[in-house]
Length: 314
Image (cartoon, rainbow, N blue to C red):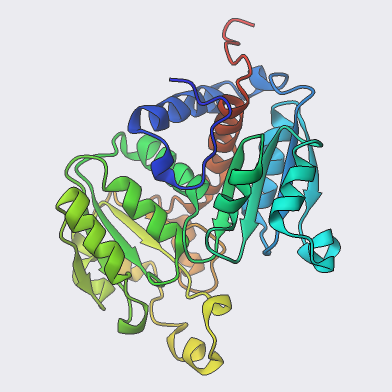
């Protein structure tokens, strides 16, 4: 398996064996971070963020800097030539002369895929509209793998905005590829998991999902509770957002009936869907999740760049 030069637009672009290769390297990096501080010396990450981001952008920058590389790009499309009308294709064709690998976030679904068709260097999808967020999925999988010890035979509940939540769409479609995983979808009727994606789960993996509007109904029977915020930026109508924004708020008291080894995960940022009193619960994994995102992105970029990662013993 060789990931050198390969784009990551959708988590399904990688086989399960290729995902394992990323996770195994990420594990080594977690355990011996300082050993990898030189492997990307002389390499440059180009960041094209057409949509606001804190964690994704900074975790990519941190990952490349921790590998010994450098970063250039923009965090606001209004400060780039996009504000003058430059196309994505032209931006990418210029940037691949300046950088060795690109990460792009864009509000329009399919924009990173388009970029990959014009790029001579690897392109990573940093999130496109309500479609996919593959490196968040890799982060989620690494978190589950390290804290639960497996990626199979899990009951995973996803709660909140399941209609527009690209992190949810990516995670479900990838976890469905592992054996014997079950899914519980918790959302208001207006924010249900898209029907076409449910149909794909059935057709490709023979997976039926359980849907409910009640978190309390199912919290005692799940291994992973993946909370998401109701995303103001995905609503066209402010009144609809205000009506739905407090649909689910996880508190310490609601965890009383949950399994003692259940994980509470969240892609962040949170608004109020997880109370601060949950942070002290040993099941709260979301800040660990954010930390592991650095290492999985380090591993991913090192493999896509094809650098020498055999540093043990140095």
